[in-house]
Image (cartoon, rainbow, N blue to C red; front, side):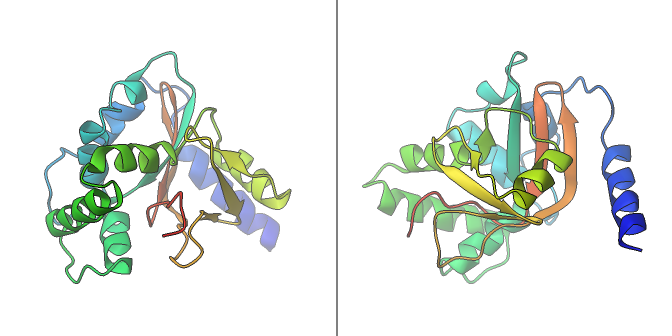
Length: 193
């Protein structure tokens, strides 16, 4: 029974990932449109953050081989709510997070934002099967920030023990021409807040 369930899950994961993709990670994230809306399952807030931190060029590098653990819009809203925000809208969550990052960054949110975004990117391609193997064998994933995240089953343990850890959510194993995107349901936090 478990074998059939695993086979069905693996088939669904690989059916959703084309064998060859022509869009870069930035292209896929930008397909959201970048306008705050009521669709929690795309990447409008992530795109806004990536552009603000000027990382869109790096995520569009055709020579790169990256894995991005990409928070969807709901992930940013839930993380903002975990930190004290009371609304449910993307724009309000983004504004709340910018104020928090500005406070943490001593008046400049961009260095902290950049660190948080780099904490979501591994410098190698990690497909879903590699992720599960890392979780099974207790192997951490090193991010471009130089910090690690710890895979466990469908989750990722970050460096803040008090906030809820992100979990993989659909879509996962999205193949880009320069890497792989796995959507997560909360933002990874690289420090103990």
